[in-house]
Length: 117
Image (cartoon, rainbow, N blue to C red; front, top):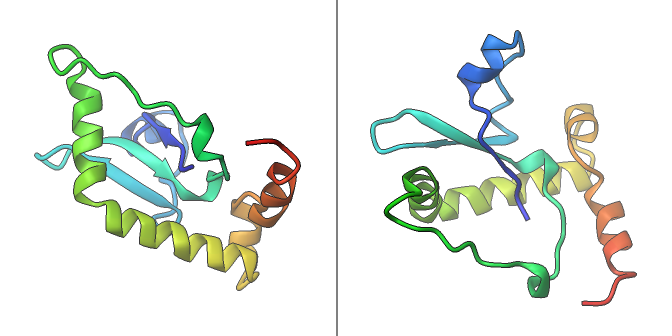
């Protein structure tokens, strides 16, 4: 599961924080190019399919969520590819950056294996 945050780069900068690392983040954008959310690959966690609940989105009211979904659907291969690269670099300890910035994916997988589906 990849967490999605509505905190954009502009909001981070207003708070004096740096832009998130592009190798760990997918910057979700509206069709006009405006950033509306971030997918945080470094914070992904394993989950059972049985605990995932689909969102009920009202297209009349929830245009923000519709834009996020549209971007994710359009770019799903790139998002999955980036998630795979981040996972591999963290699990195989290619460098300290991934070890420091990412969850310990193997440890999380071991922990979830103890739970029932």
